[in-house]
Image (tube, rainbow over all chains, first blue to last red):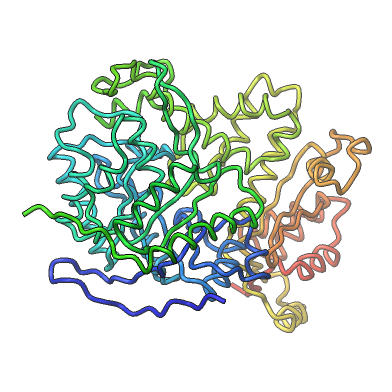
Length: 307
Length: 250
């Protein structure tokens, strides 16, 4: 039986007005309405559930009914998909207020969002779009994260993206960009291992070197998911972050390496499409839990830090 | 940068934005197409989730082609997608290829009302004795203003929307449904489950008038013009389904 995580706030340093609460170092699962009743009737032994914030920005009904009851038994991670932190436009204040209300209501152990943008003007694209890694974008992303953390009075985790194109205007590596955002804002890192693998294949990089280049101490959660395979115009592999299949073997291997680097950290199995029976997802949870337990006793690989 | 990227994302007739690069110098258009596809497919999927019976009536291929045109014409204006496609029924109504299924738009209206009822604020139950007391004051009855639970919605259609919808839930046999029989629907969610109830013409105009804020007396007078109106029946139904949230004289 999982026990609810005690909500013990640890105040950060003077610069960030943030509440830092952590998810347990266990495997968790994305919460899907298909599984509401089964979860409540069986109370499966897993570490936490994660929801997409926007799905619960409704007034009432079964979503809130079931989430309230599930929250009584499990720690919760709230994961935003619509804030458009990387966008050129100012953040949507009404949306930050909706997030604030949701976080107040469910007291999650973690709140995270993406290094991406998703809206322009009044139109919302419902996708995580890529950004150029340059100084003006860095400045803007940091301002947006400051605004979110100040408004929500808590630290947020920022997820590394899965991307399919890059920009001629980029002047720094994605890992340098993310490291600098974390250094300047005090936000944490949601290390999406599938995204690392997908992006590194798509841009012909070494996923292990990418992983080494990120600030390991900032990792507050790990995501694992499945990808789809395609090819680009030159016939080279193009992986798509589809969340529609089991976690690939290459991603499990990279995950093992991530655990070697960062130690045992809360790990989410994400499945948003082709959702299988609950048992199938529990098997992936158990695989992650096994690796987490093994890494628990190991000493993380020391990370060189820049002077 | 955002503007050019975004325009090209939603308009397949435009070239991908300038300034995209790929490690192997391959044409970025193929990679940009992944974003285009993610946006369109995820939004079509959202419509398919909201409108399953609409899809069943015309088939998946037709539905997705129609939804694709709608998504391009009316992409979401909200970061919350629960109610995306509220204007899809109106789009269907003026979509010439769907004209051969004249009841399609009203079926879609019924499905959107169900989604709205599903996510509406929870009902605050009005105790039975409060209702009994309100109704007992006969002389004040015409001045009563009835308010409904947030999930309550009605639909008046020249087609058999309730029967057609029910046939697709396996509740009735589709072969027994005459689509050209006008039907009215009351949609609400007393607890966790949504109910779809067929109403008489009198009952639906009565509820419609109350929803507009008319007094019980005024609604009664207007609805009584319908031959099938029965005040006792409709009040009984509204009480039984816990549709009423308040009854006050003001």
